Length: 170
Image 1 (tube, rainbow, N blue to C red):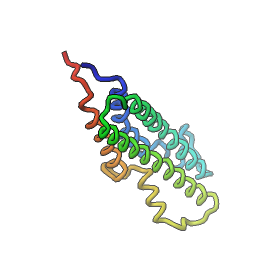
Image 2: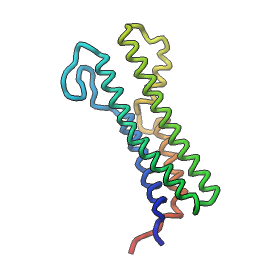
Image 3: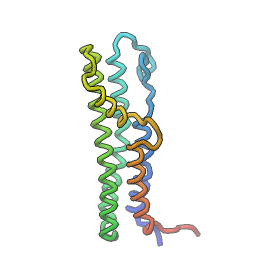
Image 4: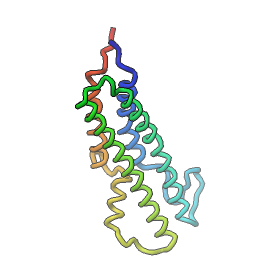
């Protein structure tokens, strides 16, 4: 027995997602005063913020691609999945999609707030909200809420697909 191709794509795609989230939430090579192209920029902090925002947005693209691959593979898996397993896979994938949207939106709100603050010189009127956004955008520690939720969803997908994965050893 061989592993059905959509199961392999779904499994592989899902297993890449935690690392993709870690990369998207990790430290990027955009330090204050240094632009991604390596040149120094001291005059305008908004250029640094814009470069970081753009780099973080680009880091989200592989997550979106992996989620699209997983969604398409799950649709192809439907004919041979038990209804309960299909429901669990759909819920796990929905959780991953929700975390992706949460990360994307948190990034947008955080950088909009930061850029507005730099451009207007006004203080942050809701620092608690900024802290919440930063916790979503930046992976502060291994095992935080976002990484835990993503890992748990991927483990659910792997467990559900295990009966469909063939042992192809000779």
